[in-house]
Length: 480
Ligand code: ADP
Ligand code: GLC
Image (cartoon, rainbow, N blue to C red; front, side, top):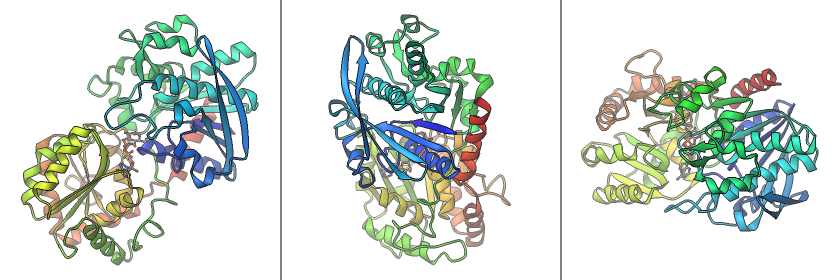
């Protein structure tokens, strides 16, 4: 099949979270399965500078209609591996910036223009390059206008650009909501400004484009597919999601075992496997050392790597400050995000520097070391569409300590409820819930044989993308 993916971030070119890992690994797995795969992302300056992209082989000039004006742009294409072509949609005014979406303080004010331009650049490239896709698969709000823009362009030019469209919701909390006056930049028919179109409480909601108009809608775990049809998790769009109840499916993400595998991970100081965990102990000592903590400490090390936001339950960690300040345990947190929460976790670390370490930056290499070197991995998320770190944790022999929401439910088995099959500890997403999880973790750590058995079960699980990609292939087959 000819499959086109469109996303605002793709590993290894640009990454702020799991979207990049998920799309990067999925396109690789589909290419390995023999499909002809293209992936489009915005030509951020940092992405263009990536060594794999340095020698872009092909360039195409674009002239994009944006309301009543035309804007120029360029598409650069290259093939990093067999069956895969990467396209950057470039325009310096929009994408030559320090961050993909905004500064830590606020989103860029022209994000609607940036991502309308991006989506239109994709459609125009499909047309000019005559790509004739079987499937165009768009991810999250930044690409959500594609189903509509494609149909509109097809009517206008009398040519089929994509047989079917698929839209995947990675996170319903980010919807791309902008003043309705920016709608004219889409050049879509005016009737789409209504409630059955892109309107949402008087504003333009880009996510609705994907939810309502893609041929197939998916999200990243079965549990989240159910949750987003409820007011509690629907972020105001549960009614819209519910209109697609019959055809929304939750397909679990996988993990890219070429990148996340303790046997081969080139970002780790030592390698290990379930048969020989000596390397894990070496990673643990290095992790503690790198954070100025005593490497000979024998109690449990809790690790956490995340966007520092409400979603990730950082406030629940703060509510348990006393535990981390006094228990015989260490906490190591790597993340970046909301300045208020960042300041609060830094204050927490300063209050017990010999027990708590916080690193505020994006650091791919350190994220691997935290996964490998921790005994427990903390994910007290308020909601979690899929979550990747709990899968990385299990592969790395690190016990995930997760709240009972979304994809965490689909990928972790609770040890307390299911002692024979458990691989992690689960709790409700509240401060007391987390506290109870932490206490259970301390008890588990004091029972080495029970801990080792849970570790081994986690490490034996198959989270590979090869399996996950097959479920997408079936969906594409059915759609076409
Ligand atoms: P989300 O996409 O909601 O942020 P996921 O669990 O799906 O959550 O994926 C998060 C990804 O981003 C993981 O690969 C995680 O290791 C990575 N990540 C988050 N924060 C950082 C950071 N500060 N440095 C490096 N990697 C990070
Ligand atoms: C989103 C979600 C996360 C998911 C990731 C990849 O960012 O918050 O749960 O794992 O997308 O699908």
